[in-house]
Length: 408
Ligand code: PMP
Image (cartoon, rainbow, N blue to C red; front, side):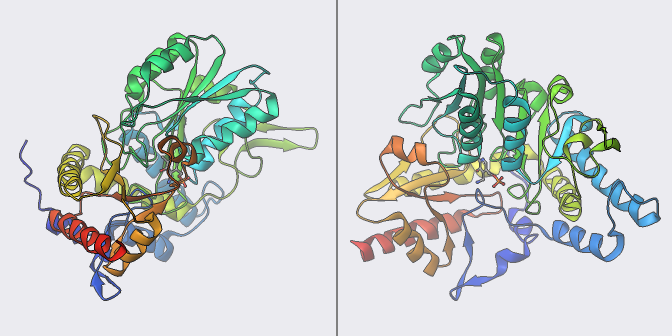
């Protein structure tokens, strides 16, 4: 398929990208950390506060119903984006909240001593630490699903683990934030289901980069975060199978999640509202709805195709730099490249690149167990979005060469 989109014009949709850093044009290679926002999202949030601001589901006045309609409309847009029913999609502050919700509301009441929770070695701490906490409270055990040196899940080992009869839940990322690995979540969820193992998929790094069909994946829970997919910070969601929602007690109590409250007891609202206590990030979700419109107008397949071309270029130019090691060479990858340059500390590299106007992340990327696997304390990570250019990647590679010589 030829790429007929005008990516230079699309880049112009992002006001922040035209600013300078240290007197140099900004080269933003940190989209996996948080994405920049297109003008339509910024203007939608601005317009909400100027014209429609009110609390949701509480007031009968005109503004209240406009705000509620806008908020619920975003829920429907998000649900359509991932091919699920809107009533099964709980809106929350992001993946961290979403996974804690599953941990406390689904797992905590069900875990027994001796039960096993599996999480892959490449998980973000958000899909690891909540499980450790609830496992610790219930005397259950956490075990790692190991990976290959290329950064793919070791499927044979996983098959053995799933068949052990002890595993209650598998926590797995759809796309690794460090390695870029795209996990075969559909196949793995099918296998887990055969053994009665519940699956929690972290979609934080998948939704921004590709079409995601949660119904086709066949997981039990799917979590995502809005700020990595062109939406405002403090937005995200959790989809769960309806049977799971029905069986789960509320995570947080408060306004909006109830039908009737008496001192003798409370009748809770139906999902998704049962899990949305308190005033949500209304303007943020209205903005996230605009982000979904923006991504869909571009087309998720076109975004994926563009980013794959950028990734292939990045691999080829970075691979030619002497002493540069790339972490994560899975056969299916999203546009993320983690690397180290011999003799240079990741933070020094990132600091000197910043002086060139290049924003990359350095550190452990909230993935300590993965750093331990590779025997490093930190890496540098460049993550790309569809609006990045091939010229930026060439400049990035030249800047690494320059910095490498400075640090040598
Ligand atoms: N999982 C993955 C794979 C991530 O990349 C991130 C964000 N770095 C998170 C979870 C946590 O997302 P949030 O901070 O938005 O809750």
